[in-house]
Image (tube, rainbow, N blue to C red):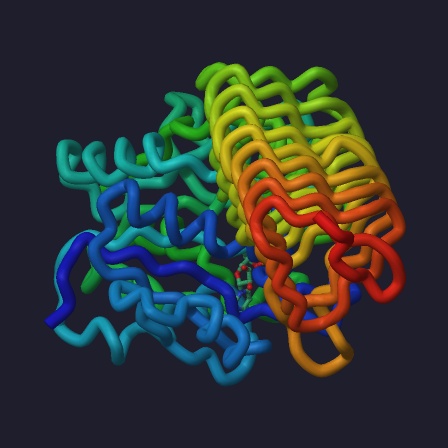
Length: 419
Ligand code: UD1
Ligand code: MG
């Protein structure tokens, strides 16, 4: 049993214009495959079942949604066009007869609110097809919306098939449609490949329905910033910039200071507490949790799995990977902390590093509360430094060492100094 509303997301194309070995929808925007954003927008707009159409790179695309039971897959064996891609969902949707939101997987900036509006509006108007459109400053690359003299929808023309006059139209097709399912199948049965690309165009379906006397409505529901379709690496860079601005905007609303937004990179999965200041050229990637009143950067790199508790400080040229800084812990200059637990108030000196990888396995470093790690120290994991202990400058603390609380160790290899 398929639970509606359903969203179909087209993701079977290779994306030739990307010139990549990877399926286009898996290229990352702010650290995540772009299709994730589309699936999340569809879900937040109310879709209860999401059918992703896979083809090129199908296994990798499937793998990107492991553990998400509302996401199902339809396979499009040959990439014969967007109309054919939708048709490949017919078997999986069976006798489902409710509304279906059709989106493309290469528009990561879609927001849920206008999609929810489209679903609601389709119901209210009882249309066979409701098209969301956008009026954009630069329509190049998109299909154009043609209307009659009374402003009623006529058809979509692909850019390649446009006359010079049609090319000048700035109302575009972002590929956000709501159809009534059985009627959609009827339309898809009628489309042909008589176009410049010799493909089955989904864009012909609304026109077919209109010609058959069904109610088709086109409404400019989408904002220009929401509909950037990623077809090339240039578009990918634009999508990253727009998404990054959204992420930072939200953080700033939540009370985070970002000194130089354009020279800061923050993954959308990161959370940051109020009164934390992020200085320029800092890069926060993956799921990173930062508390309140922290100081990050300049030139800090915080990687996936890192947690900074309140008042922690990570400064210039410090890389922190899968590590937890407890409250007030500090590494202000030139350090690497990987797989480390850094106790409250501990201080990591300049150029100190954890050697967490021996070429085979990664091991943990535990640094107690209030410990002082001297400049240039190398902690060869696994090691454990007790609360309030001191590691001398340039010490090499060898594998397996456990430094008792309050002790001081120094030298190469590091040995405990007399009390
Ligand atoms: C399409 C629309 C265009 C619209 C634009 C919005 C058509 C014919 N054109 O053009 O009107 O302005 O999107 O972004 O629909 N795909 C498949 N199977 C295929 C072909 C494509 O699954 O056989 C998928 C792709 O993976 C992609 C999406 O459909 O995610 C759109 O394909 P793409 O080639 O990017 O279409 P556009 O040229 O952008
Ligand atoms: Mg596209």
